Amino acid sequence: MLRQSTDPASPFYDAVVTPGNGIAVQYRATQGGNAQQLVDFVGMVPAYLMVARSGSSYSAYTSSDGTTWNLVS
Image 1 (cartoon, rainbow, N blue to C red):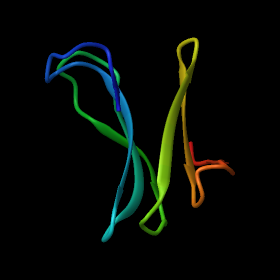
Image 2 (image 1 turned 60 degrees about the horizontal axis):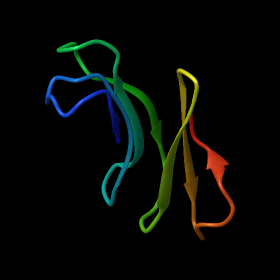
Image 3 (image 1 turned 90 degrees about the vertical axis):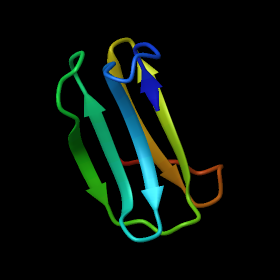
Image 4 (image 1 turned 45 degrees about the horizontal axis):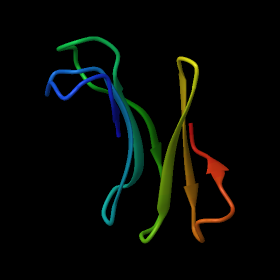
């Protein structure tokens, strides 16, 4: 998860994985705004997740081995 600040209502971008729901990419664009789900991706645990930033653009990646990364969003 990348957050603009430590404020609980802060804008954020994250990638999460759960045993029952696979991989999800979520974000909140504005302070106090609603969180949006960008991607709901079928994935299996265990999985490596990586969030990357380039300027003001964010991307999420997943890997089964921590070496080969695949773009999720």
